[in-house]
Amino acid sequence: MRTLQQHKMKVIAFAITILSFCGVSLLTYCSLHENDTDQNSAHPTESADILPYLDIKEIKPNYALPFCEKKNCIEIDIQSLNTQEGWVNQWIADSQSRVIQDQIGLKQVMTLQQAIDAYVRKSDLWQEKLTQYLPYELHMQTRIAAQRNQYVLLQIIVNSKQEEVIVKDRGYFFVADRKTQKKVSILDVINPKQQNEMNRIVQEHYSQWLSQQSAEVKKKAPKKLYWGQNDWFFDNEGLGIHYRASEITEKGTQLDIYLTKAQTQKILKPEVYQKMF
Image (cartoon, rainbow, N blue to C red; front, side, top):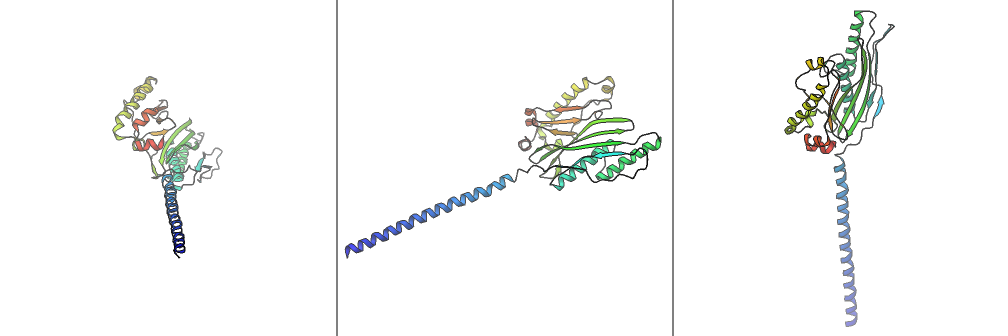
């Protein structure tokens, strides 16, 4: 009896040991599984900060031109882009409207169609002065020049003929933040404490540019160059500011101010630099 009782006790002890081991193993597995789940759920949060690249397709935008029975009719050709984001598409159209208006000296809030209509009216007025006058010609190319996380750089190139003046490869730059869905000026990204340093860099480049201009341009050119609302861009090295030919003053050449990587890092807000470069 004593031997049988001892045998039963050993069997029970063994069973308890097995159950204890299984319980510990199950707890370990659950803990590991929970950790895996936590880690997996963390990844979408991290990647949510990084927006996917825009899916860009070239398109012909929808706009109408007046019916023309004349021998020489106005010529407008706009190459545009379409993406998977409606806000970006509207921003592109708004930027194109601004560019068209700039060709005829307007600065208003207009749709693309309204800007085209204004351009057509300006051409008609020109032709009314003399029947031999040719109508305007406008050709616009649009491209996404760079994408850095939520920051997008749009470039629009204009070739035109207006009132016997021929314009070739006139460039415009626009920057937007896809995350906040806002247009971005250079003042939006510069560290406020570094504005004086930015101004010093701009005026230094301007002085060099001015020294290479004609006496006529030097006479008409401003003493200081304003940059807060100007076209700006970014590339692999840093940011830059763009002044078109005759933008600073009539007959003045184009000026592009490129900041070095070190200057860019110093000038920009840290959170912007981290995402843009």
